[in-house]
Length: 343
Image (tube, rainbow, N blue to C red; front, side):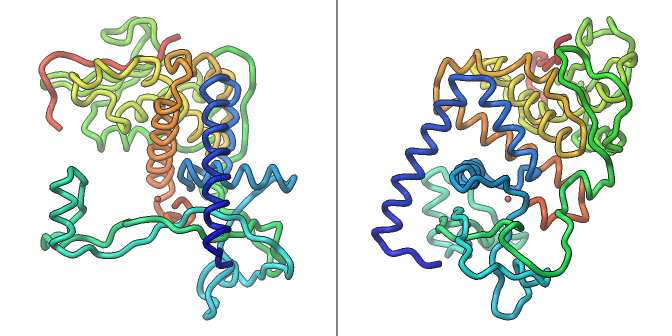
């Protein structure tokens, strides 16, 4: 559905106000942050922060619980709901989101961007790659707005054929690991160049923590306690993988400026989001973290939220390599860095 210039301006003004209001709530209340992570887990972190907020806002206004969004579909019926043999019911109003606009920049434009400090992706032959150059408002529709052939929402959980489990008491997770993802997570840690091992509590570097990631000259290791439950083991392993993917142990000079509370909030939130998407509820343990470090700073909260969604998306994509479509968007320095998951 095309927008007039007036509608577009009104839409931009309204969504910016709502975006800032939601950020303010996230900055002020840890419970709001946990709710945000829960919402993001429903969609497997497929959407950017802006679109996540937009969809949740519009769904709340309409009084529905959204499940799965796709565009209407092209005329050929090879995309969107049409490709799934479903049609949007007459009279339904789409949900607005920001869609990326992609094109291949000229070499001259690419050099201008690079001179301004912007990263320009290039093909193996050196030619500027097709990349996102802007965004435009577009519409998408929830499955509840469609009719047609039966369709099972392809959540990450369904893709891995696991069942939900969990609890909400403030203690370490207990019980089995329902995700079936532990070996894959360990594989991702090792692919990143880190040695992984289960070790007794009190071991070197680990101490009293459940897990630790250490990076130093000639050393990159992840250690996880060997006496925790299977559920806690996958959660802790994902927490440490999140530290690696966030770059929390890279560029030590910069990391000294990055508050440890923020690093732990990012890693813990990513681990919770990924576990939740895979069918394991870890909120009880995750609630111990969040936001005291931010002191109401909206820019910090925004940056943290964007990092959480970006990294969670990449992990979920790697854990479901056959389902990419449904999940879409350095050498050691002197010294020693460690990211620890406390008891």
